[in-house]
Image (tube, rainbow, N blue to C red):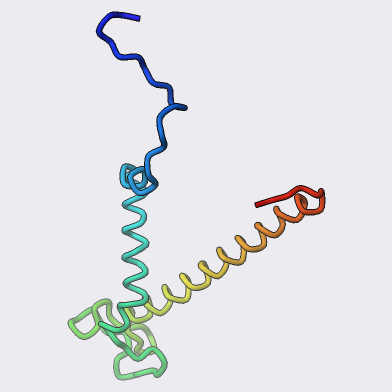
Length: 123
């Protein structure tokens, strides 16, 4: 070892960085979290700020171009397109969340059962 140089520390001896700090350093992960958070806000908070009637058809409002009243216009039955995006996004997020939770529960039970059958103790 050369004089005046500090000894190199191995990776094993350094404590792991806190999870928040590691996450904050990953720019793609932060960008992904921002996109998902904005999508959740658009779908769940958006209908309170931009309310539209997505149940009843309004044939007087069929196929309108985008305007101040309808930001993305209307469809063939008079529904506001932004309202449809909010409603459809909400349904998609809820289905995806339910599928993720169900897959986690089934995977946990499936993976834990062989260990319990073999007599192993699991935490």
